[in-house]
Image (cartoon, rainbow, N blue to C red; front, side, top):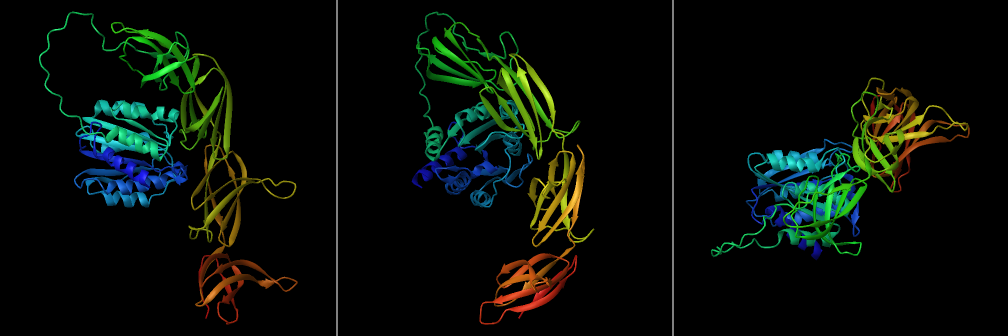
Length: 553
């Protein structure tokens, strides 16, 4: 834990200092609470590392620092709107933030772009100095553009900075969100494990503030020389030679040319429209956009700008996933793009990507529906299209009686195809839990099966593309509650015996109390006691829509 304590100590500096080491006016920490935080680093879930880090770090925050806490993906699974400012920026917020992190669930998606925007607005970034610290272990999954947001916030803010910690991201993944920090003058910190997190934070924020520079002595006027340019390398990337630039983000890297046919020392990097000022010499420029990559050698001087156009030899595709013709984009739809040499499946609702030329297969999955299309792409081609999955929605609820009270706990659903197989069984399509469960299904006939504790029921239904179908299943059941002091457990049987004189067991429980849902009918409750007291049989009747409370002595 010593390493974690040191990394935490460095992290507190990140929360209370700006990029240059001076105290920030206000800071909002944004924590990624998506389901991927259950993944482990060195055998420990990332969410536990995050919780412990926050708890320890915040103990050292100066009492007058105004720290706020925001999270996304912590309340609703599959929602892009699940963003909450849990603790507004305020002094003495350490205990409130720690308590919020400790009680948080990790289950949702990653709307990081919208979260940063909301945090900036909460800090009144157009009126005051504002700092946001984003800790994320995943990429944007809700269609946001973090690079564009960074530019927007920097241009319209008084003094806005976003620092981004990529917690467990790969280098390629980090490139896709580093622009959010770079475009605001902040820092992107790559942390692949606990030690890397510590090193990155110490290197970034633990150094002391620079001492004031001494007033220089007047220097003699320099001899006249050739004018030096502000920038001498301005690269661009094109889908094909002489073609258009991609709308997707382009990541540029500059390496020293070691004259051996391989890249040498990494010199600099930038995104999209970027300019570099480099020492005269030979370099290799590498451009990456989506799954496409190009490189070109350049020779630079200090007094002449070089503007290489790198040919990605690629196509750009934009996909909009819709459940039905004319419907809005569905953010729950997963888009998988299989291109020559790889696959991208971290796309939901909409996806825009640059891919190498050749055969590319796009698959959109929404619930139990799926649609695919294979394209033969050529350099410079731009594809912008809707992909219609062709599904309707079904919303399921169970009621104790027709038109009566809705069952709200221990409800599990299974959706089957209506047609039976030769052996009399049906193929299961999908499943879910809880009231108001919704299913995306291809058109056709189905059977909705529901289990509520000891009760099972079925309801046939049909689905039409683009329409919502309410599936309301009547359980014809009530609730039994039993209290038997000193009991070891219970068994419930149907009252009617079969031809061998045996009763069918319906359910069972352990302890002195039990509560369960039972179909209307006659039953026998057998209570087992922990002492020498004999088992006791209690006949009872369940009525639909009613609660039956039994006390067994």
